[in-house]
Image (tube, rainbow, N blue to C red; front, side, top):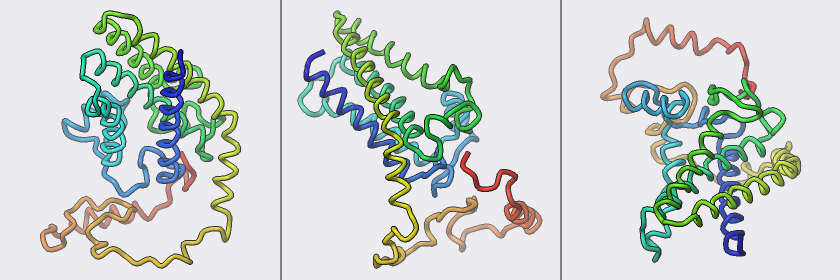
Length: 258
């Protein structure tokens, strides 16, 4: 493993760390865009196919972009002077799946609502898949898929270098992630420090609402009717009255993070 390989691994890991950090700032303790102003899709052909592939998770508007943008970025070399080859494509996909696993795990490591200690079977509703030891099955399949893709890249290239490089990269990512686990309490402390009473300067920042706030969903219980009241069908009092009554009832679990 030469200096270029080490640098590549470090930058890839920092990318995963940055993605995890951004998502923690956006989502807080509620993962899988649970409380974001985005849409959830489980029904229909698209929702069913996605759920079957992704361990019964719903497809969300947030994740359409969150998953697609990194996939595009790993292909940047092919539009920056590197010739496209089948081997190179397979290697890029192998990197993507490895990145996805590390990025996801770092979200739990750094998130004060979870931490390594609280990342376990039954504590993450969107990981309803079987768990092996301390990790959900998805992590094992993600890493295995990345290794298989790297192996196919080696076959396509006619040499073992793509697979060897990938295995060294995975080892480096594991070491860096272990360091992050050890250092995570420092981040948790900083996270709480920045949110201590009186620390936020939002009240010192001049803000004003968007010009058409009513055109976007602002959170809460989703309104599944069209946003334009002129074209929206009249609500059925029997249905919507019952829904409103249900929505006012406190949930059995309260507001604690899941």
